[in-house]
Image 1 (cartoon, rainbow, N blue to C red):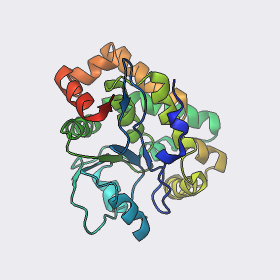
Image 2: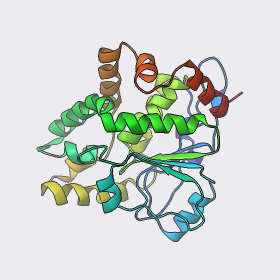
Image 3: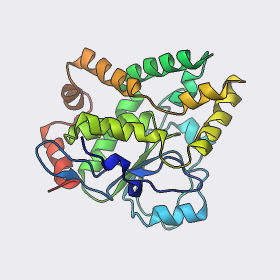
Image 4: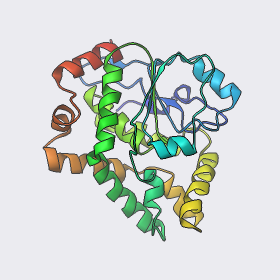
Length: 264
């Protein structure tokens, strides 16, 4: 396992966009590393300041893959720089009835229940048909090699976290490093501001929920990603089979991803 997850330069500290970071830089099995400056992830951009938009514009994004559904995009429309010339890739429908962390908040009466509900949610995420569609489009976009990309959802941790973990696997990033990147959500950027933003959404839907439970719902835990992996392995035999058979990330597409995203 390398320590590149701890590199503070991978986090873009923005005032109105949470959890914005570069998820490249990790060593890959067999040699080389995932390129930096090509792969970014974040939460939604509805609160982006003008300065945030300038900082994001400097990344010269070719693709923005928005994992949210229509309802979320209408409730939290993302701001874009006036000169943004990339393509926004999205699913025209609902990728989730509610954002996963908001969905998990139903009946999450304490911290133990919140953890259990998040694990159950992650075990089911890979089998949601709309998410499969947008995951396919995510891999298609990245395999073109046309430039940097950003993937985001509402909080940038659940749907986005699954997508990033699957890409890391396809690129042969060590599982420990993929987990380190997943867990970076808990420390990247202004955690208190992100929790406060999530609390507003969660409480508007479900009423009073304790701060300690909100923090669990707005964070991540190794058990969540492990639950996703185990459920895929149980249904498909392996993550490789899931990538190839369900997401159409076969040998040729993996070769294209590696060609464009890995450097010696």
